[in-house]
Amino acid sequence: MEYDLIVIGAGPVGENVADRAKAGGLSVVIVEAELIGGECSFWACVPSKALLRPAAALAAARAVAGADAAITGTLDAAAVLRRRDDAVGDWDDASGAHWLEQTGIDLVRGHGRITGVRTVTVTPTDPALAPIQLRARHAVAVCTGSDAAVPDIPGLRAAAPWTSREATSAEEVPAHLAVIGGGTVGCEMATVFRSLGGAVTMIARRGLLGGMEPFAGEAVQASLTASGVEVLTGTTPTAVHRGPDGRVRIEFDGRPALEADEVLVATGRSPRTGELGLETVGLEPGGWITVDDTLRVPGSDWLYAVGDVNHRALLTHQGKYQARAAGDVIAARANGTAVDDAAWGVHAATADHAAVPQVTFTDPEVASVGLTAAAAARLSEQEGRGIRVIDYQLGWVSGASLHRDGYRGQVRAVIDTDREVLLGLTFVGPDVAELLHAATIAVVAEVPLNRLWHAVPAFPTLSEVWLRLLEEYGRPEAA
Image 1: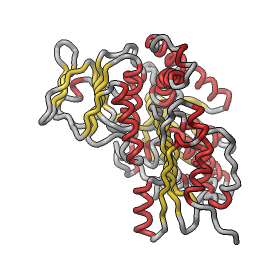
Image 2: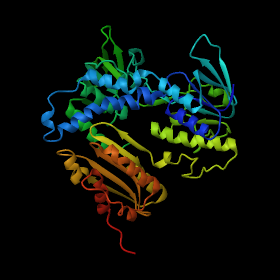
Image 3: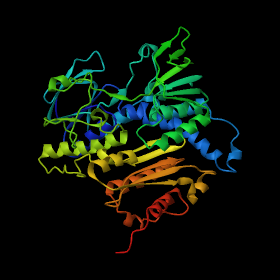
């Protein structure tokens, strides 16, 4: 079976690579061993946000006088879990299969393995079927994503810990959940299970949300603590055991052991590349795959790695962004048309380097794009750029006080003072996720600050914070 393009992995990334290449006139087959729609649709972004939304809606109502009087109960945990089931279509991917059929993309269900140059052998999901050999005329795209990483803590693997998959697909709320890890997944799942009535203990080697602005993790930790979550920072488990009664015992040095009903490991991701046959093309099985800005593996004219597997930006939306560039450039190269792979070209994933947007859907939300103040300081040392950091309390904006009583939040803008453009913004506060795309546009387009003065925020909205940031920076002098 021969195609122009073989895509391994039918998550959002693989779907978008296939779709763009098909739109470019190529014949495409996609290989998937699990569900079409992948991790994001069934075990990550979609179910987690479905679980988080009821608590966010309840908190918003409680924060507005008059509306709070209507709140007479707590969340219905069973109804929240049913809502999650609806959001993931009860883990049925029929709609995804239908979309592939309608788009003209062939589907082979099974495990794909690279067995030679432009060759993929598929072991079908149906054991009654013989292996299928696929050959690509032009390209193979690896879009297999990542798995939850489980640290080498003695006894942890044997204790059958939850990962993000088990947490987002849980059928009941554990009486006590221990969470190892203080990143986005850990913070969001702690928020979910505490809101559904479970006791939660977080165990973080450092503070929460490392890599973001420090005030973001501090605000989320304060909120989680206020909600009843026990947050243990500066702490690493030394051993984990699951007893005959099914409960988990977590041991530490210098601290009493902790017992919980379940333990969730949220300590990062590992590439899903161990069984792909990468060794047949000179790559390391189980490792991240290095690519250039067109998502092609250096030294190869046919192999691409898109999404989490290349470790550039482990976010679904960023993987889909890469996928659009990859699908288009594969088609361009196959058709012999011009390739626009310079910075910010249609065939280059330039935003991966310094303009990645992301949201943590806790209470408060954390939304950021571009560089943090610390990252900008390092850039300043390397390149001698002038950097200025402006902080502003979001609660001082009129729209915030009308949005929620006693609104509290913070915004940080990181500015290149030589060029007078934004390098990064971080918003922390209720419902700040919807502020993020305007910030992303400003960072990606490098909109001059003197032009931003003419982008008038509507009153009274949270967006008025843009005007306040400009006022803090100072209006440019007349020419």
